[in-house]
Length: 359
Length: 225
Image (cartoon, rainbow over all chains, first blue to last red; front, side, top):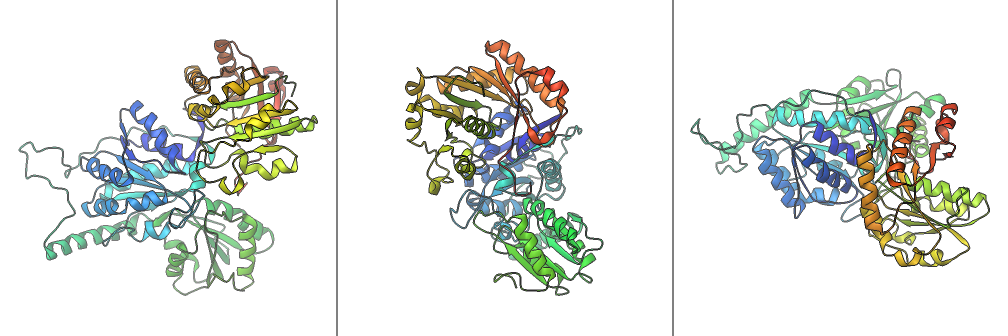
């Protein structure tokens, strides 16, 4: 296939096709509409089915239905549309159905705007819908990484029978980069014991539901889910570190913000501040390891986000009081500059308060 | 630029680089002392449009015809009325940055009577490294769709084949080959081949490839670039 110049949204769609996704149900919303448009053209070519639903709510419930048959299926949206899907996502988690849900986030709250933001972090990592559940969340920083993570997302979804979220911001969806799709063997259809594809007198009827009227029985179901979440926490945390071996100060950032932060870290090192970067790739499970490795010698952490401070809570929990954690964020679609992050990093290294929002 | 047309319409596949070309063509024309207006008719893209370079246009005294700033990111298909004024202004070079594909080109159709008798060139911007236009069939299909939607006939091709920072001479050559094939099919010339100035690719082969090689600067950058 060779290298192609593609938009982030197109890469998500093409990567899903490469990962064996055959069904897409969705509703367009800026800044991820290219994903929907690309799928409309691409899936029929790949022998799949694209359907534009009448709403986000309809789309997520179509995903529920398709996932119940064991096929690889996805939907995508952006912040307000993603909020609409929450009830369906909770149902997917409760019924243990594998699916991929993409959120290319924009500025909020409410209708907000169409500029990039990371302010849906709480929503994707802490549940989002009702009930006790978590969903694995993958946050790519480059378009090439999207290709790897989409494949992993579908594999995690099948392995644990869980929906998986891919979270990006509008910039990741809209930007263009050269990408290459690796020639990997086609995804082989795995036989799933639980799918509802019709009874043939070959056993008890199969039922997919999140409904359980008996309290003890629903509690057992919850305990089963919690064991599964513990297993995901144990096995699926992913992260990347840069210059962390000898660092005193650590910038923590994910997605596109990590790419901006790298330049600030490099400049700080040039100026004699031993800075490093921790980039969570999974946001749930939040990677604890890089903090365990550094928190007893760290002089400080600086979380940088395109939000008013959401991931910083997980950084604090991971550092567990062993070092100071400060925060710098821009909101409403404003993208932090590398100069701003550098400045905050220098203030952190000077031991001062970062800004009036920093604690 | 050596162009005789007063109005240049840039069309092409989604993401083919029309906006960067519009900026470069406008700055080049200003350097020749021309009065220049750029019309942002992109109703498809939410980011990285001509309107996002408004400060640059001000700096170069290039008139930008775009939705008012407070609505620049409204996610509404706004077509500025002022476009008629610059199209009618015989003194002004006009560069029209249309949105991608037939969806973007559809906006042009309504101006058919304004420019059908004017001095007009309609350039199809080709990046052969983009999906769906990397083959002759794909590129030709896109041209025909755009022509139908815009009620215009493509008068020339711009080879803007690139892979961003990963561009190699091979990519440009591939784009050049495809442009020439498309040119034969359409009976229209390859007007220019563009090369990003920062790439610093050895030029000897390129000169052999085309005597219409132009360099361009990239203005719409990402925050880490």
